[in-house]
Image 1 (cartoon, rainbow, N blue to C red):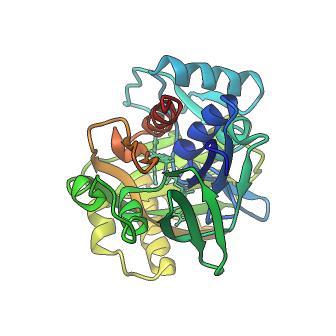
Image 2: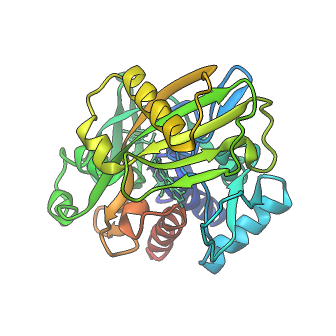
Length: 322
Ligand SMILES: Cc1cc2nc3c(=O)[nH]c(=O)nc-3n(C[C@H](O)[C@H](O)[C@H](O)COP(=O)(O)OP(=O)(O)OC[C@H]3O[C@@H](n4cnc5c(N)ncnc54)[C@H](O)[C@@H]3O)c2cc1C
């Protein structure tokens, strides 16, 4: 076995940024992702001719390394600046979005990587100094010299139950808190007669609404909107059926915007670990003895850029191994 084989669980921005940095340094990297799509919470759901960015809405860019990446993505047509009509809202920094959907932003990162999609990892085992992964389909993958988990903190705790690291992951991540979010996707056949592309509210049940087709490079001809419930409302309604949640959010949206248009399509998706409420406060977690690490937005902040920074930091830890 070569010392340079790495398994990364999770093809969100953190996992892909980490993988890209390691592949650039001649590591042999396998990324395992349970979903069919890439990007994790940076997601675009396509239904017929409709498309919805039902996870992350836009990025702000502060880290010079992330800026270089967004510049590259913009130059190759995978990102653009969004200037929504948002009366009364102040934007101190430019808002960047993926093109033609938010998930477009990870395309340049993922190009050429070995990503095994639709493979859910259930168990990680450390045997004789090497890593093995058991998947939901009953397969075992490995051996790998290095194991990196790029999944939300509660899922990382689950995946580390079966081995003992010098870092007790459960204790280490005890104070990390992530909030859930119900997202509704709604399309109207005719463009709504509203003058805002974005609605925010810190108090009510509807925390955010955005006109997806108002973003640059969108292909849908229907008026597609994404609605996000507040964390409080989501927690109270976490076990409700998706159809009931979609109807409640769409009705609230109509009430807030002052119209009674009939939606042509609506659906809801629960993000169980959506937004970081309390981060770890360190860029990543690394156990040099086991060659095992953790990364994700939850290390640093509730923003996509934090995922990129965390994944990049973890790659630096791996590269520093003599
Ligand atoms: C509703 C919502 C709105 C948001 N709005 C914004 C915003 O406007 N601006 C902003 O900057 N950020 C926003 N965010 C946050 C942003 O999306 C995240 O910070 C970022 O995408 C996190 O990336 P990540 O790689 O750390 O995690 P994730 O994107 O969660 O990636 C983890 C990946 O691991 C996979 N995975 C998990 N368990 C397993 C397993 N056992 N086996 C295999 N694969 C597994 C998952 O499928 C996923 O693809 C929002 C998030 C949500 C949900």
